[in-house]
Picture 1 (cartoon, rainbow, N blue to C red):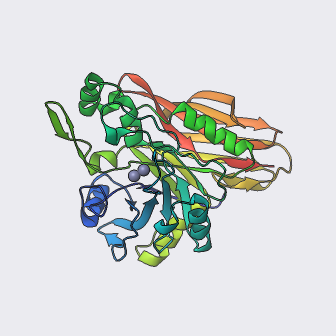
Picture 2 (picture 1 turned 135 degrees about the vertical axis):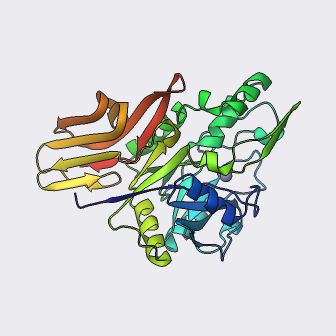
Picture 3 (picture 1 turned 120 degrees about the horizontal axis):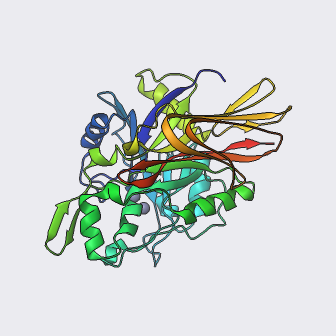
Length: 352
Ligand SMILES: [Zn+2]
Ligand SMILES: [Zn+2]
């Protein structure tokens, strides 16, 4: 493997241009405070131009979350990056938005594809992905922090507890999302994984409880997307924007719950003969296949092939040798806040 550089960012953030509470500069400041390298705003159905650039050490990019506002019940939120134009007029046909994004050199992900609403309010209804026949999208938002929080609010008591102690409840992508991901991969689709905050910093009113939940800085310490790039970020906006986009398009990504321990330093590689692959890559076997996982701290590491666990290790590394082709991906779990939490979910390596 050539040298790869690693960066962490958040890809799902709302500003005052839709239903968020912060301006772009405030989002960037919160990202910097949380130690992120990049952050991408994704306001609902509005492509905001003129805000991209470096704010301090953080690169802020603009994307968009597109959906058909007339559709009832609501479904099919699509995260679009680097389309560089307003595509929401096509929102009624998700495939048209995906096609137009790709034509423009961008990439896109199905946002919070599985959702469980909360009975506590009409604005807490589930907004899942419904049109599963679409193709060509880059991946799925495997883990959406605020979406998981919504699912935890099954009643008022739970809402009050988790509003004050979210880390007691947050535990990983929904099982149904993981299963759906494996089904898509089994169809031969390439589907990368990203994770996002879906940060709004909204105030929720629950009877006597009225509290500004989840400041952006807190959310940017939770579910993030880590990327691998072939060159380091240089501080030059256009160069670095292209590197981040390239990493997303290549699926050089993993989802990290950094609150449970920084996931920086995680690596998943596959080798055969003289060839080596990282997350997102294709690899053609020329002999035995050696898969290796490294984690920055101890965890329960699981290597999956075609949706089935083929190797497990408790510690900071896993090594597995096989002759079998397949779609390989890694999940790592850790104990945090008295519970078992999802920690790292890698994009696949596709071995033929
Ligand atoms: Zn959404
Ligand atoms: Zn959103």
